[in-house]
Image 1 (cartoon, rainbow, N blue to C red):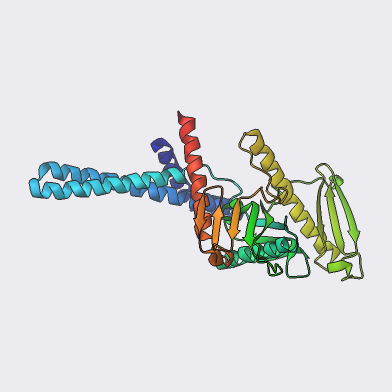
Image 2 (cartoon, rainbow, N blue to C red; image 1 turned 180 degrees about the vertical axis):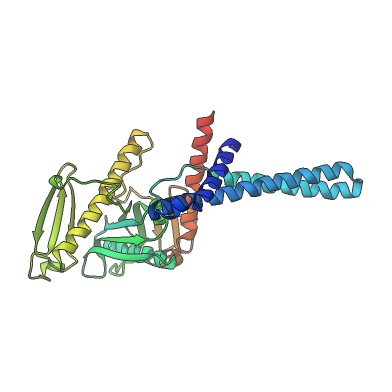
Length: 358
């Protein structure tokens, strides 16, 4: 680890020097790339400097303890022990900072929510999940833009797609993919029985042209007239767009905009993100660490998290995490859950590195 860190420190210094080079300063794209790489390394370089200083201070305290009388020696030994403990904690942080980063972590995301098992109640739950993520995103000052929605007419949604724009959005939200389950007594239930319903969530990194290249010849594009709930016409022109990616069979339809061009542009963005995620899943499967598809079937048994209203409890079944602040979570306070999931991801990566070294 020391050799790698020393290499990074040297690289950081070289990048800092390069940022003052007139040739680099005169090339906006090159400067931006250099500055980003420099910024990416700054945290680990700073942590390494702090780690080295803690060790140096601990060694100095140990030396003073050996040279001092009994009373002062005890004080210096305690100081050295405190420094060693702080250095050990910093070493753990350095290991995390050195973990390989997902190149897509800094991406914006496209998030899809679909009602699963449970009829109208599932649609209401899907709408609540959308509000939860929107409030969380707004709390982080991220920009949210709804791309499409199919409503149930009673305040629920059959499915909704929206984008979240913010630095690191994918790294934060990617663990939300999967089937979410709610247990509660529906307002329409006269007998007071608890019902179980589901909604599925897919979080995809927003794909750019450099990430996914789509051959126009592989696309089948249909246009049709937009319609509202119950088939009511909301547009007198053929502005709705349905794009089928023939090689994979993926289909994306958009009708929320009045312009056919805008609907087409939105549909292509969603299609590219789905293709990027599909490729990531394929690679993961080849590496033998594949997980179930993000959308899944929406069946009750295919769950990652349960929202239990009678007990005001939210449980993430992947990490065994439970909180009894149901209202807070649905109100957008996801920090505790997301932090726990991120910590688990780091633990698994560290374990994989340890296993690879043995």
